[in-house]
Image 1: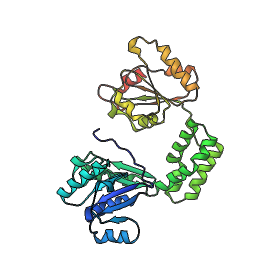
Image 2: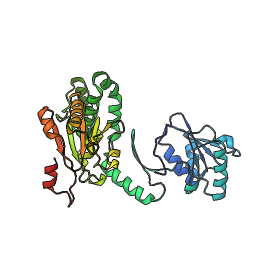
Image 3: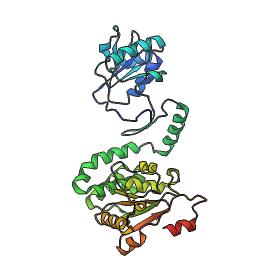
Image 4: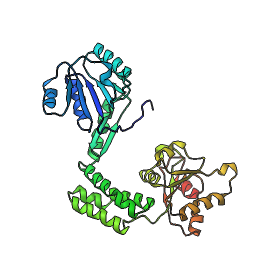
Length: 334
């Protein structure tokens, strides 16, 4: 990645927009979605910006611009529409140590504005490092279709109930709870407009600890011949839910990028002479500790017999098959 995606805290922070025309208005509309204090630097304002200033939604400074006016900011937008002026103001902003976005000048940008799907507090940011904005808009359109308009309201309810869940449930239970919320009856109720019913379902689940957790504690997830693009959606979901991931040398390391960042990763080095029972013992011990386990494999034998003997529930999630990996060969491997 040439750019790193990160969400900036905007509450009670200052954003400066240099410019008073349409480009500045576009950035102002975007920043008004945040809690930032917006300050415009321009000798004059177009009617839209003038109305925002008159309504007290933004501040306006029409005095000569100096480097000091860009100091202590969360973000600076340079949007005058004049390339020469933009370059000069960029130099002043950098002199003040600001993080700067110059409209239509990616070579002068410390930060690039993404396409945004806004379901606050759920926000999806889509970037192409400035290479394909049309593609970013296409992805945005698809995401707008996928995410229900009031999903953010359900997320806000969850946010208000997180402390209650933390007092009653263990970390593993909480992950299972929130997975149930966003994949089960609570979300379905919220989608059809039954907000109170959805909230009550969540409160009841927190109080009782009953939210339909899966019985399987081990998921044996196949990756076809080991490639990232041959993972199934369910396989990716299991990686996202795992506390511990056991994998071997046949698996593409990029597949592990699909997992939760805080999941423990354990490499079973069978090629290095590990006895099979050592890996089996580690896996069974982790499962008996109540952890959610993924055994990630391509075409190697896995520990189903040991799991059955230890009476540990498991599920098999096959990967996408290729001509080189036939159903018969996969069944033999598993």
